[in-house]
Structure formats: structure tokens, C-alpha cells
Image (tube, rainbow, N blue to C red; front, side, top):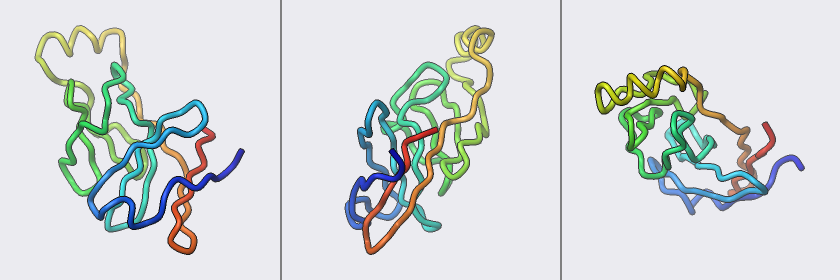
Length: 118
């Protein structure tokens, strides 16, 4: 399918995030100082909704359930699930560290376009 328009630049405040449904995927669009970045909307650990997560650095979101942290620019798992102690350790036996899926973003004439294909 290629790139699809998801919103206008002003629809996502600087430092904010917004969820969008695209085809059979749900993506999370982040508006950072560096620009716009799109990721999968759910943590790859146990599919927690990252929209409810908090930014612990300008470009790093923390999962609201088990505190895994991901760089939203690259999807890199900076820190894997650690909470609650014991339970997260048990789950990690089955769910190895995994990066967050990211999607290409283009901004043209004030419109934000995302390519939801892997």
C-alpha cells in the first residue's frame, strides 16, 4: 500500500503521541523535537498499550505494565521488562528481549504520512 496520510502536523502536540489504526495495524505516532516517528502501539513483551506509557527520555517510552523501555526513533529495546520483580523474570523466560516495530514517516506540506508495511 505504501505511505498513507494519518494526520496534520498540528494534530499531535510537540512531545505528544497519538494512536492511529492503519489497515490491520495500530500504530503510535510520536512528535519529538527531531520530528515524527511511528511505532507499533503495543509493547512486544505482553502487548501492553504503549499509549498509556510515559516518556522517560525525549525519545524513550516506558511500557506501563512491566517497564520495558524503547527508543521510538529506532525501536531498540533499551531495557527489557523488569517489573514486578519475580513475575517479570518468569515471563522473560518465555518472552526474550525484542525490539519495538517502527514504520517510516514522511511529512509533506504539513501532512504526516506513515508506511504501515513492515
